[in-house]
Amino acid sequence: MRSIQRQLTVRILLAVLAIAAAAGAFLYFYARLSLVEQFDRTLTAQARLVAGMVTCDEHRRLEFSASDAEMAEFRRSHRPAYFEIWTDAEAPFARSPSLAGRDLPRPASAGKTVPADLRLPDGKPGRCAAIRFTPRSDEDDPPGIGAGPAAGTPGGLPTLTLVVAQDRHELDETLGVLATSVALAAVAMAAGAAVAVVVSVRRGMHPLNELARQADTIGAGSLDQPFPTVGVPAELQPICFGLNNLLTRLSCAFARERRFTADAAHELRTPIAELRALAEVAIKWPNDTSGDRNYQDVLHIAMQMESLVTALLAIARGDAGTLPVRMSDVDLVKVVRDAWVPYEAAAASRRLAVQWDLPDAAAVRSDRALLAPLVGNLLSNAVAYTPEGGRIVCRLATSVSAARLNISNDTEGLCADDLPHLFEPFWRKDPARGGATHTGLGLALVNAYAVALDVTVEPSLAHDRVFSVVVGVPASARCNTVSVMAGNR
Image 1 (cartoon, rainbow, N blue to C red):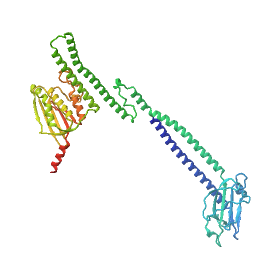
Image 2 (image 1 turned 90 degrees about the horizontal axis):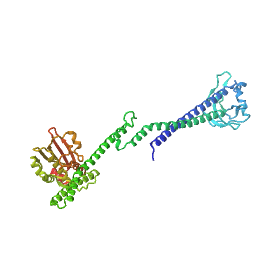
Image 3 (image 1 turned 30 degrees about the vertical axis):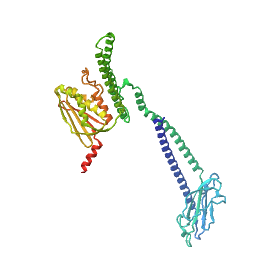
Image 4 (image 1 turned 90 degrees about the vertical axis):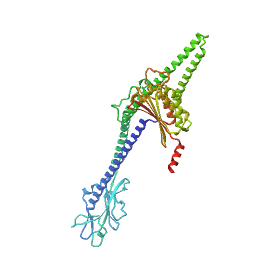
């Protein structure tokens, strides 16, 4: 299993180690360069000092004069310094006593040379610096270092080559101590960084682990315990807000589920009680001549229960997205008129004024088997809940893309806060559940059919207490083609 904490720890640790290694390498090479450069400057200073010991008399004869103190470094037995001087004739002019007749390597180039490593006469590693110079005459200033070839022309002073070498043991020891120190510092830093990163990441992940622990304790009975949004890290606040919104939605869903279960049991309890009463009567009085009427009552109750179960099954399938849909071209005007027929007598008996504003035809793309009960439930709801003597208005407007059916009716007691609950199963404004005609599933079925058909259903309540439902149905492709062809003409 992938662990964010482990990945974060490893990545931060690798980054810290890479930075530490880069910093250590830079420090080591910078210090090494500085130490070698300082060593080379010392060699060059020694070379200048030795060059100052060479003079030229009035007869252009070269002389090398040095005091015992100046030559002490070149005479010592333990890690002595070395020098050797050559003329342009490549003949050695002078050597340090430490060479004991041996030679140092002479630079091959006659130009400017740079310090370089070499193997000393005693076989140990060393470093040398070479210079070109002209000796000073007895009456002149100190010699000119790095004079050009013109210095050796007739009438001028000869040009000499000087090499000074020194054992680099101390330099190598210093560089070794530096490398060891940097390596130990890197190891110590790596160990400290590992501990610091692990502890820091673990502490940084503590709020997230605490959030997970709290989420693990939430159950169906504790959905009212929100996650804290104050005092948590800023990165976790959006998660806490999102989880709290999820808990609110879950709480509402569980409440609807409990209410749905209770309402379904309530709706089924009455017909079951009636069936039981009829059965008990038939058993108690088997010779009663009213058996035919009892059978009719049983059939009526069974049909009511079948209608209720069918509606519940349709709603469940609609929520699961498994309602079978067979799309075809449908005349919405004919669907509306056919759906009104079962309710026409009830509207007349309640003296309802019905106003129609329908075109001759409106071709839409839908499933007639689902669209017809959708429209029928809306008309049934309008007839049932319009006050006696009220008005129902049914309008249908068409466009190239859709047809919009508006069914509106006068209403009493309905408020804007009721609109979100209208499409919930078994919801009715009257808490006493008055009336046996409606079970509160009509608008829930409308919503299930609308989702399956990709139809929009928009309820609204006007200030004049007029309740409206606007249904948007996609227009038929054939209708769109005809409209486009007419426009092209």
